[in-house]
Length: 195
Image 1 (cartoon, rainbow, N blue to C red):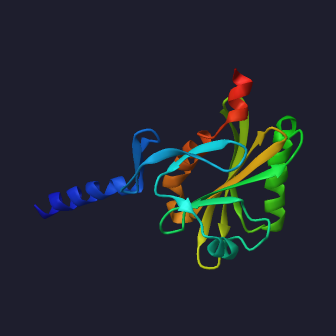
Image 2 (cartoon, one colour):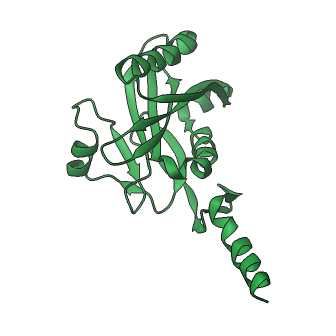
Image 3 (cartoon, rainbow, N blue to C red):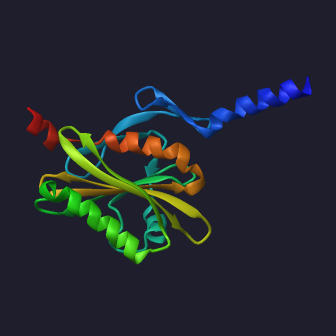
């Protein structure tokens, strides 16, 4: 009987290692249920589907986590503040024609300035007739390792630059969630181009 109980407990805890569901109906992520909703960002009529329990990072906390004055314009974080999505709009004429070079440039800058980082994938996602470039890597903080997924997508004559990050220990589960979230980006500008 003990052996059967151990198997049941093990199987019952396995779901905590994965994510199930989708952005529309909600997801179980490491045993916690997350609801998602489209949220309008204050940048160029951009919206994205985010977990409903993510909130804006307070400025005092943002100044500590992102000490540069060039920190992201918007930082959405979970309750524990260890998982976040960032958004910054950069002036970048002709970004659409140069997206592959731009994502390669960001990749090289991080690789040269932080050589201890471990890089994984670099790819592109189609979004409403546009192309989003992304790459992911592991970085090192003072007390832990972080998983980072950096992405860029052109919007008018600008470039939306964003980063998803979480503790590296949570990355296997959160990477697919992060890719689903950034794939939900929408811009009124893109809708007008489709019409």
